[in-house]
Structure formats: C-alpha cells, structure tokens
Image: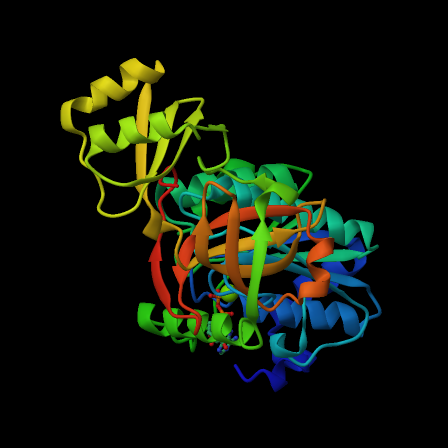
Length: 370
Ligand SMILES: Nc1ncnc2c1ncn2[C@@H]1O[C@H](COP(=O)(O)OP(=O)(O)O)[C@@H](O)[C@H]1O
Ligand SMILES: [Mg+2]
C-alpha cells in the first residue's frame, strides 16, 4: 500500500468503511489486533485519517516497540491530531513510553503499563477516538496472555481483529458477548508481503541511527536522578568497604567493580570474565548472610540503551551508555539530549538492548541480568 493512498478514503474496502463510520459515531478507544504483517499499522493510519477527515480529534497510540512508527524502537508513542496525515513519517510523538526492548517478550509489565498510560494521556488531551496499534505477538500462551490482559486494562470500546485464519480466536473468544466492547473480525489484504527478520532488524537499526544522529556525550550523575525499572543495580545498598570487595575478589578470583546488598542477597559486577558458581558461593553467602549471589559483568552495561524520563515516567530522551563508574554512580552516555535540558530529567531507566552509536543492535540483556 502506498503511503500517499492512505489519505484516500475510497482506498478502504466497504467492510472497513462500515466499521470506520460506526466508530466515527460511537467514538471511544479502538484496539487493533493481528499477527505481524497483517496490516495493523497501515489500517490504523487509514482509520485515523477517515475520522480526522470527518472532524474528529484522534489519538494514535503506537503500542509496537519493535516496528515502531512513533518514536524509536524500544518505545511506544502517542500523538493527538486534528488534521489529516499523509503518512507515519510526518508524525512526531507528543509522548513516549520506554519499554526498553524491541519485543514485549520478558517485558509484559512495561508494555501493558505504557499502553494504558498513553491511552489515558490521549484522553487527557481530549482525543475523541483513540486507536491503539499493537505488536504482532498474538500466538501461543505469551501472545494470548499479553493481549488478554492488555484488553482487560485498556477496556477498548472496539477491537479490530485482523486475522488470516483463526489465529486471534483464542484471544477474542475470552471477550465474546461482552457488551462493553464490539469485536470486528476483518481479513488482512491479500497483497501484504511479509517482512523477513533481517528486514525488520534493518528498519529498526535505521530508526535508531536517525534518532541518535545528532547526539553528543553527556555525564550523568545517578545520585541526582531517580532510578526506576526492574534492575538489580541501584536496587539495594552498595557494599563500599574495601575489605568486603577484597573478600569478594578473593572468593571469585576476579576483579570486582561493584557490589550491592539487595533483597535477594548480593549483587556483584565483575570487571573481566563471567564467574562460574563454584561451591555455590558458600563463603560469600555466609559472610553477608545472603540467600542468593547474582553476578554480572561490566560489559553488560556498555552500549546499553537507557531512558531519561520526566516525573510522570515518560521519555525525555534515550541514551546509550558508554562509560560506567558504578561506585560513584556516574555514567557517560551518548544522547541527542542537549546539556541544558539535563535539568528537566527526573528519572532514569536501564533498557534491555545494547546498540552501537550507529544504531546497530549488538545484543539483548535478559531480565535479572543487571
Ligand atoms: N491494504 C494493504 N494493501 C497492500 N499493502 C498493504 C496493505 N496494508 C498494509 N500493507 C503493506 O504491508 C506491509 C505490512 O503492513 P503493516 O501495516 O506494517 O502490518 P503490521 O503493522 O500488522 O505488521 C507494509 O509494508 C504495508 O505497507
Ligand atoms: Mg505495525
């Protein structure tokens, strides 16, 4: 589908038009569901334009942090419009929420929480219709679970279910007969060509590259910021005594950059190689009265994507960690944020992706690793 054609109402088939005009009258929140390459994003824009053309104020929530259209990958975005739009490229988000990964897998909480927050934000901005584009994760238990709870929390008035066969049935049958929401099953257009994994990756990397194009290096003092998110670093109380560190180095046979007493036990960042669990770290557990020893290496933080946020938990800017001083809590990051705007930053979140300064994806960090 050509982007230009998205503004043309006649490009929508009769089936789509009927749904669009019904929602035009009833307004409310519209959730678009479908597997990858089922035409969710193209359909979202098409519908948004139809409502805009007919005078509605429309909020678009891009709830796909992988193939994102509003904001860089790893984020979800919201834009509220009153005038028709030519394509996703001309839109820039009013509000961004950081998921930290290019996939919702292992990140259901921020995915669900962010989508809800963005929908609420759209309502605050007086959008009459809010359409929510989503990721293509619909298959299997993870897909069903994510979508079920997303529907539960968003409680959309309308669900557009784009399915080739019956892939959405396990999700939508949980809401059948629910008088609060209308489900519209639709078939994706036959001519949609599926994108391969390398093509998707290339699209994401190009988006990262463009996002960080005019960036520079800034020094962040974590003590000035509120550390948010689900990481071990900064979650407890630092072990700063030299004797403790020497003890850990002797036991682990590796240089220790940082250690912290956390709820689970002891969290340790080592400099060089990863350390294997010899003797289950019995001596360390005994000395610190720790239940669990979690060890990670410094390199996990190198090139790690982070989010700098406002008080409401929305993104001010992303950054890429270049240098880390864990003890002094000082990080050097590569970011498009200008130094004078650092004062606006309130919170800091670690992401789960490592990318280089040109946007190339280097790897993913698993939950519980850092
Ligand atoms: N109705 C359509 N006719 C032809 N091509 C389409 C149509 N809808 C989407 N496409 C194309 O198919 C590809 C995937 O569509 P997209 O909307 O991005 O899917 P999704 O968001 O479900 O992954 C895009 O390149 C898009 O331009
Ligand atoms: Mg899409």
